Length: 234
Image (cartoon, rainbow, N blue to C red; front, top):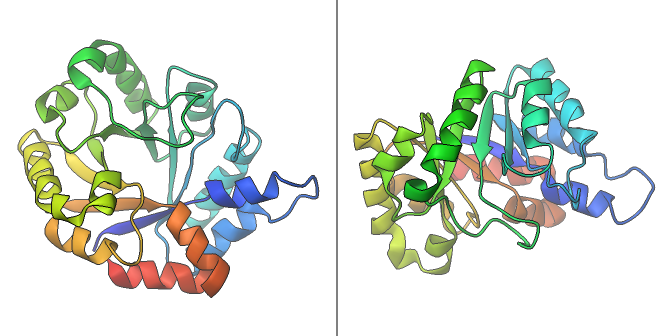
């Protein structure tokens, strides 16, 4: 079974619109775990547009108490990403080449260009005890990705969500990654309509990280039921 990590960013986005302290990001993380999610994801951007620095150790504590995976996403060359990883030592660190100007992550690394600067980052994270995943486009050079020392790639799935005929290209990307001795994660715009097909077609898919669509569904279904439905897709 592919594991589900629930991204809590959009809960934090709603909280940040008012200075009243709710919705409580940690509480919704616990609900997701009670429903069967296998872990929690946060993406603490430098401008704190959603997850704030103060949230990181709190969510780490929620995951530690439940004995589940904590995944921190972000750009290791901006903001406090590496400080967070040194402080809480997440189960997984997912390296994403986003910038302040982007509303959301929208492409993977250029591993041929970025390999040399990613390699020492990956090495440090692994020394901290973190599994390392690197954000990758479906047409990425998987051998160059593996050369960074990363354990996994997270396939950027927005192109599949926009055009399901791309599914075969993602299956091929997973096969190339496996041949390069990388394990497979995926995320971005996966939802209740497209997740089952993706999981069924992409070989070796170990984990998906889902936030925006799942939180949108939770507004209608409730967090507990939304997580249950995503798990059924997997």
